[in-house]
Amino acid sequence: MKDRNGREINYLRLSVTDRCNLRCVYCMPESGVPLIDHADILSVEEVVRVVRIINDTLNLSKVRITGGEPLVRRGVLQIIKGISLFGIEELTLTTNGLLLQQMSNQLAEAGIQRVNISLDSLRDHRLKKITRRDISLHDIEESIHASLDAGLKPVRINCVLMRGVNDDEINEFLEWGNRIGVTVRFIEHMSSRLNQSIFVSRDEIIEHASHSGIIRRRKDDGGTSGIYTVGDGADTFGIIAPFSDPMCKNCNRIRLSASGMLVPCLASSEEVSIREPVRNGADDESISRLVQQMVINKPDSHGGCVSAAMWKIGG
Ligand code: SAM
Ligand code: SF4
Image 1 (cartoon, rainbow, N blue to C red):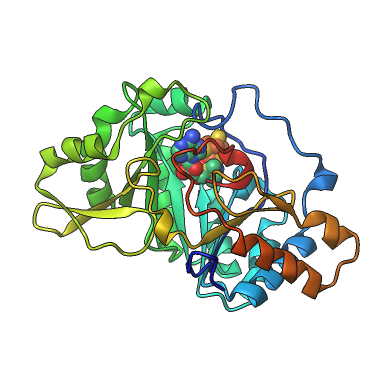
Image 2 (spheres, rainbow, N blue to C red):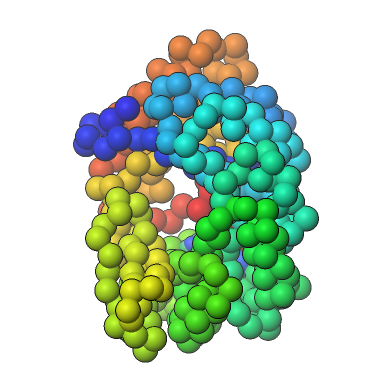
């Protein structure tokens, strides 16, 4: 289905929980966030039903499971199994990787095809500082190997860049990614929690990366990350630049939060609750109408005003 700007909306980001086992400085306060009551979170059956209706309405080509940390959600495998029966072309997941080593085979069996793993530093002391938890590069590398072994390929790494925190690691990340067989995507920090002075722009990322070879941008692939090649073109990396390069004209996504809010855009306050009608006995057709209404009214762009709580609606 197309929105009023003619964009085909066929990608759902599905947040299955607001809970997380890390406290990344750019995402959550150290003390955690006010948690949604369990009773207000969509049950496994409710999530699967709503995704079925969204798929019937929009003919989805992609669903990405996210959170909070999706792998801490009880029932995440059942949710994935349920969704996998709808025959959607791509079923993927974004995770901080901590539980991936033990779950990658089950995720592959349930129907996940590939994973994005968040990793903001290659140095243990920085990882601990950024995530405020005792994690190490070794933990994440083990998860990456487990994912590749389970066939969850290609693995992509999401790295949020912050000035004076990890922006001196761009070239190390490129070298590391090539060595272990993953593609790194650098993300411009969205100013939810930290001072703006830590913002590193797309142009600065390219400038740093050019120390590894000549950087060329690949033809636009229609996604929200620009893909770049290094040197002779064999190696690639991505930049997700919601400020420098918003790509709103190509945006094909909507989001469903764990509590059943449909969100048309990161900057939007026009959320629609699906949980209420679902729990009040609404039939599929009425829920589908709500989805259509939200898609038609999807904002033209976020206009640089990206301050959403990513743990709530999924990054
Ligand atoms: N917990 C999982 C994880 O970290 O991959 C999935 C949810 S997390 C909200 C999804 C993505 O959003 C992560 O790659 C994270 O780095 C990114 N993210 C969260 N807050 C952000 C912010 N303020 N600016 C840019 N990216 C952010
Ligand atoms: Fe948790 Fe992901 Fe947010 Fe980090 S970015 S605190 S891992 S939800």
